[in-house]
Length: 254
Image (cartoon, rainbow, N blue to C red):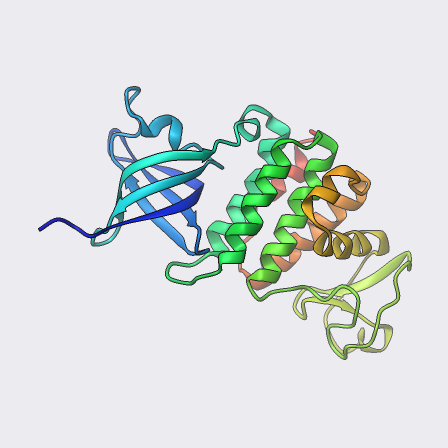
């Protein structure tokens, strides 16, 4: 009896070698759920999957349901996003996006806005200037956390809810509480000082469309400050340290 099949649009987040010529592809499908499928023979030079299942590709796939892993039957490229693989700078900015989604998206958990957000982010990133790449990366990570139910509080105290005024040269942030804390609450929770401009940049990136960020990105120092805030939030609430984000901090590409 033939296995049931299904068709979906998906974004390739990760590829892992299997046996001599197969690949396990981790996908974010259009429902926002994560899927892991086997692309048989994908590492052979003659395989049609070799060029259609590249990292960051948006593809229309037909899969057969399996016991543990589904099996890829057909794949057609909807958006190749080739510049993200041709440029080391753009690839290094896209990698944390895919890494976080690999942890944040879950099987059988529909989060369609997560797919839509990622599709738009990758489309904007592939046409963006190199200096805008870290800001777009930080914006996607922040928006993904928010869509996953982990929206950081960057304008009001995460403990008491009191407004925390913008423009201060330094503020205090509690990763455990998920946001900035006011002067009165600092003694109540574990927190650390952070640059005010980095917090302001993170808040702006969270609320601003990707296209507008690409046109007028914040200064690189503020974008990287926002990335460090995201790294701390992900480590605290997702339980992982994004290695690709650590590469961004140390690679000196920007």
